[in-house]
Image (tube, rainbow, N blue to C red):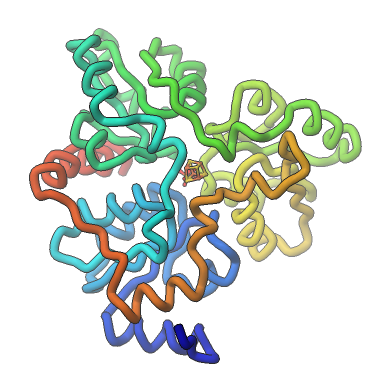
Length: 310
Ligand code: 13P
Ligand code: SF4
């Protein structure tokens, strides 16, 4: 299709026409981050989606994020630039298998990481993100057992931080599992002054080399505020764009993947482009649509999360 010569101006005009807000995750391409009204981690983006008074939410992120925005805003138009922008972690937890897993652990509280489908959220008691998972589990009664789904790496990290025993669903993120411990150690030796910061979706073999672990927003804030001048960053490298903006005098080195490839860029997140962002606003689709029963059931655990992480 014909594209306007100035996509930034064309998107700005469509924002006005649709009374739209553009929300972008840090793992988006830099130009998509630049056009966004708000850039954030999963919790920050959920909070923005919960509080916006725009009529249209354009979600430059992956499907579960746009779906969460729709769960919170059934009467708003929620657009996702590429309908194929999924998530390996969300895909690793099919609803029928998860329902059976839950049935095999009756009386357990079900805590699900926001990186899951609306169907999984509807089967959950509380949703969490990487920035509030520890705080949420700490607030749960000590005499209750807990299922944690779908990310086994975040789950294991929460177990270590809280001392609680969690029943883990064995899902994982293809991006955060591709960092190489061996190459990370070699890189640390080449840059002894650099501090390693990592996202809790990484495997334990990578996290054990990190001096700071947190969500994308927490990593950004830490690098900005730290006295250190150099960082090795073990998460999707899209965040480095904001790190460089926030601290232009500091050095940010992406942690190396197992193979020599771009495989630390999330293949789902990067399906969204500025062109597709323009087209989804022009055409009012792909639109997120959800059955009302699923939406209503998925809303409760999201509201509980928002209440428990103020
Ligand atoms: P946060 O946005 O909570 O840092 O999680 C990162 C992620 O993997 C999103 O898909
Ligand atoms: Fe899913 Fe991993 Fe991509 Fe995040 S980085 S959207 S968890 S595949």
